[in-house]
Image (cartoon, rainbow, N blue to C red; front, top):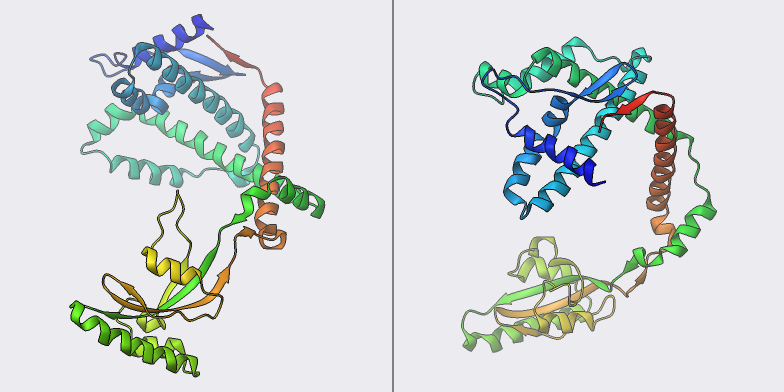
Length: 325
C-alpha cells in the first residue's frame, strides 16, 4: 500500500507545478474504460481546489499524503463511473444532452471569469471541457433514471416497517413539550409591579369564569404573539443539551400545568405573566403510524440504492476497466 500512496502523492505534488509557461498541463492516462480514457488532467480539474486547500490545512506531510491519496482515489472512481454511465446513457435517446444545454452551461461558467483568457487558462481546452460536461450530464441523467426505476420497483411490507420501528425505537423518542400562550404586562418600575399583578389576577378570574384566553391576550398582552392570541408556541424543558427559551420561573410554572391549565401570575425580571397550556405531551415515542411514511421512504431508498450499486458493479464487470497505479 505504501507504493500506491507514494504514486498518488506524486500526482498531487505534480498538480502544483504541472502547468508550465505554455499553459498546458503535463498529462497522463491514469485509467481506461474499454477504449475510453481517464486523464490525469481531468482528475486535477475535479480536485484541484481541494488540494490547494489541503496544502494550507494539513499539519504534516503524512496527513497531506493520506488525504490527497483519498481525494485522488475518490475522483478516479467517480470518473470511471461517469464514463460507464455516460456510455449507457448514449443508448437511450431520451437522455441525450442537447448542444443548447451545453452552450448555456458554458456561458454561465464564462461569467465567473473576468476575461475570456482567464476562462481558457482555468478550464484548458474548451472542447474537452465541453465533452466532460456532456459526459457528466449524461451520467447524471442515467443514474437518476436508474434510481427512479429501482425505487418504483421496491415494495416495502408492513412487516419491514414494523421491524425497523422496533429495532430503531430510539430514533423516534419524543421529549416532553407544551404548546404555550401568555398574557404579558411589562414592568418598567418595580413600584408598578403590584398593580400589574393585580390586573393580571383580574384577567385570570375572567378566564376562569369563561372568557377566552386568546381574546384577552389580543387585548392586553404586551409581548410578541399577542395578535395571535398570546402564542409562544411549542416549548421543551431545558436539559444538558438544550438551554430552552423560557426563564426558569416561567418554565417551572408552565410545565407544571396540564393541558388547558391556567397558571397563577408569574413574575419575571421584565414583567408579569399569565400562562396557558393548550397541549401538554409527555416524553415517550412517536407511534409507528406517525412515522410510517418516513420509515417506508427510507427503506425504499436503501433498497433502491442496493439495486443501483449492484447494477453499477455489474456494469463495471462487463467493461474492461484498467487502473494504472
